Length: 171
Image (cartoon, rainbow, N blue to C red):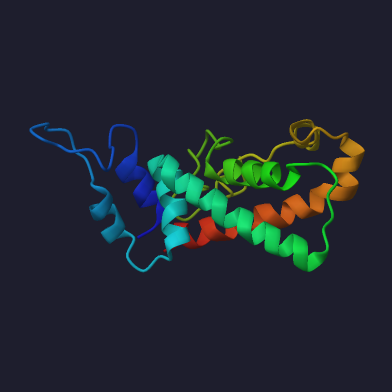
């Protein structure tokens, strides 16, 4: 089961978790979708449900998971921070970036032009990265501080979220 198939199954009108009760509309239950994702870890399944099924509860679970990972890395690597809430904002931006707030319109976030070719517009990522200026503005810092102190840390956080997405996509 891969994420492209999930996206196709959930595209637009399909809403899992909604009772069909006499309605002829095609819908998948959460249990049915979970069966299709058999073998994924909880966090991989939450990421797939959040990204491809617009599940806000799953998105919150992904955010909390990534935030815990980031705090562990911050302690381990001695990342100090005098700006309150910066780690929360970095995690929120990374999760939002991968979840689809910046989805590529050419491939609809799948990262594929065809079944075997990556999308040339987003280079196969499925999304467009935020600029350094936008990131600095979101964090309430100037671009120089972003580049010198936070860009590499954000890249590490983003890479972790992308790694979860890649596993879910190729499951």
